[in-house]
Length: 247
Ligand SMILES: NC(=O)c1ccc[n+]([C@@H]2O[C@H](COP(=O)([O-])OP(=O)(O)OC[C@H]3O[C@@H](n4cnc5c(N)ncnc54)[C@H](O)[C@@H]3O)[C@@H](O)[C@H]2O)c1
Image (cartoon, rainbow, N blue to C red; front, side):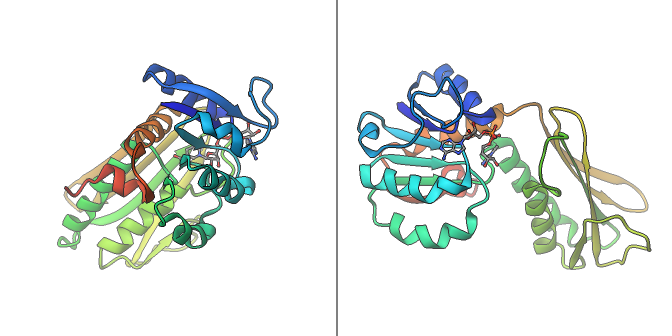
């Protein structure tokens, strides 16, 4: 594939390396600030020479970028976060089969497998009242938000699947935790930490399920594989369509 990258920060540079390792050509790099970018802004005419656009940039320009790709008939994969309130607005216009469009808040295949494993475990634990439930995450000290979007997804999976748990506490507790609550803690430290653990605890034993990422590679690899899967497809897609764990 010939790929145009929008955003050449930490993710853009990792995508560049992994796409080349998989035999793809990055023919356009759009970034207003990075000196090694080929273009400062996205222009429709430039996209005629590429098969796919991959956007890991900033939420501010995302709607314009989607429109430009749609107008030029170029498939688009979006990893940029922070614009999801706009998804309902764009969904209808992208279901017209003009281009192939796929977005995800988390392109790591490992994290998506982890979500499916935790969901299965939560469904099993639901039948065994003697197990309590807790969560913990650690991320690098540069991370802007806490808890992470991944932790929020894990919290929802636990609440949706364990009937006796109806609330999550993310702050420190200065009281006894209620039986219906899950305490989910967040730590920030180190340069390359991305880790989550879910614990199921009975008077007799503890079961822990953990995922930790060593670097950005898993996110970039997932996005490149999603772009490969999207080739030749038209319409609106999410990560579940690409991974298709249920089939
Ligand atoms: N979906 C996922 O799996 C996943 C994983 C990691 C990061 N992200 C998201 O991807 C985005 C980028 O992450 P990052 O870690 O590379 O951030 P970063 O800050 O390292 O890089 C962002 C880059 O985008 C550039 N940029 C800003 N506005 C732009 C525009 N209008 N057009 C082109 N380039 C523009 C910036 O100059 C910068 O170089 C963030 O939204 C982040 O939350 C998503």
